[in-house]
Image (tube, rainbow, N blue to C red; front, side, top):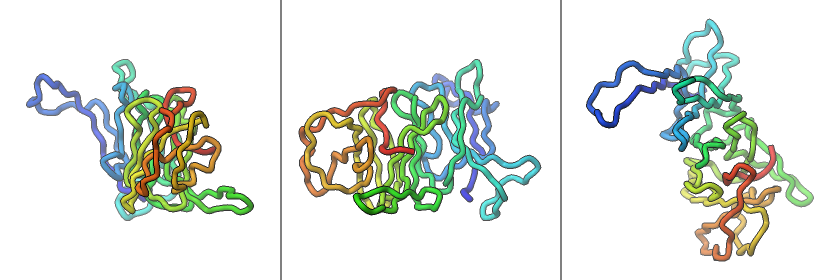
Length: 242
């Protein structure tokens, strides 16, 4: 089980930065912060996303190294608007919270991306590769923030993600760094425009909605690629089907 922390949000006056922080407006008692990307404020400033341990009624608080039976972890989106500050707007169970390395909103604040830095049985997938099947693991998931429905999945046979982030421009795709020191820059593409030859490093390229790896350390030419299309909400995302 991952370690959890108490996450607090205080009111802050940027015009008076030396005023002590008092009167926390929101306290999340069991937030999972596996890295500096463990929680994220949306670009619109109205939402906060975090992974939270749902401790059963009457159970003791989570203690590092001590397992709690039937403990469930959720990805939650909290409201930061004054009318309902701290209200959980959407939530869904997370299969491998102890493997999380990044949680991030998309540039339009309409999607939330999860990145996984370890391989776990709950993330295992079988992908058809011609006449055979290849064993891969989920490394990225993209959810719709409004209802936590799954929008995209990106599997990989070799990568484990240290950190991942969206391109700052809507539809610009995403980038992630691996534990082996590789940098993957992915761009959503619906098949339009010229496709330059790219060395096939990620299995995401084999699935229904392709992601193009446009930065290749072998020196493959990435010129001629389109700027990248977007899905119905305007964000670039991962590839594949739930």
